[in-house]
Image 1 (cartoon, rainbow over the protein chains, first blue to last red):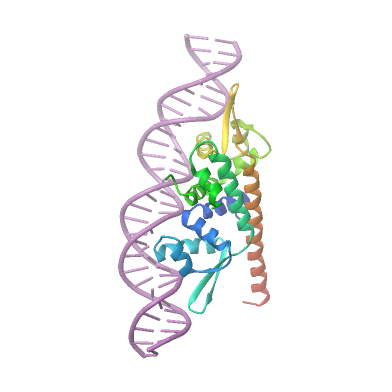
Image 2 (image 1 turned 60 degrees about the vertical axis):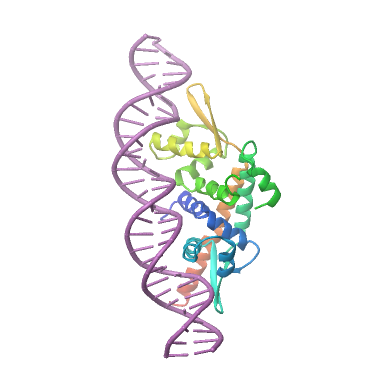
Length: 110
Length: 110
DNA sequence: CGGCGACTTGAAAAGTTCCGCAACTCCGAA
DNA sequence: TTCGGAGTTGCGGAACTTTTCAAGTCGCCG
């Protein structure tokens, strides 16, 4: 066992710590999607999205495959959805006194 | 409009993405603890630990208070424990997928 | 009061991550 | 075969984080 467990955990959380990556994961919660779709929903350069997807792929959080001329991405495990849900709950708890984000959180769930 | 929600989420995950901070949170899961204790369990300089604690404090994930000559830290919400548990599950899923792949590769002599 | 132990803060150096650009690969259609 | 669309990769500089060291605060004991 070369990498200590707490370091592997830290790496995993750090992998989620980027706005584009969070948005990708939220979109993938509803099922696999082609890069084209992700690109249409997230305002970012193609090369930037591609780099963020590579980060998620390297961490083993998503998988990709080619379907004809499109490249599809999917969550590698549905546990990711639980993690995002737990994150949402903490954000709710932490923001509950200040910052109007809480209202947005309740209204949209994402 | 304040900070977009997906950015607040990303910041929260980024906050957890550091080995020392993960260890602190794991130790705090069993209840409040003084800095002295944390320092004894985590191999790091006092000033470094203090900076990491400040990061967690600023993010609202932990709270601190003074008790006599000691400073105590505690999780600000028990939801943090759920998040760590969800992280652990994903790590398990991701690592076992990798192992599975490794075994398959070995079996095929590639 | 003065010193000590327990922490925190500030600031600079060292280390990482992010981002746009250009160059690339790959597939399918003409 | 050549073209174009869909993605990916490499690179360098800007932006951010982490670490370290020195100096600072705070409460307690003698």
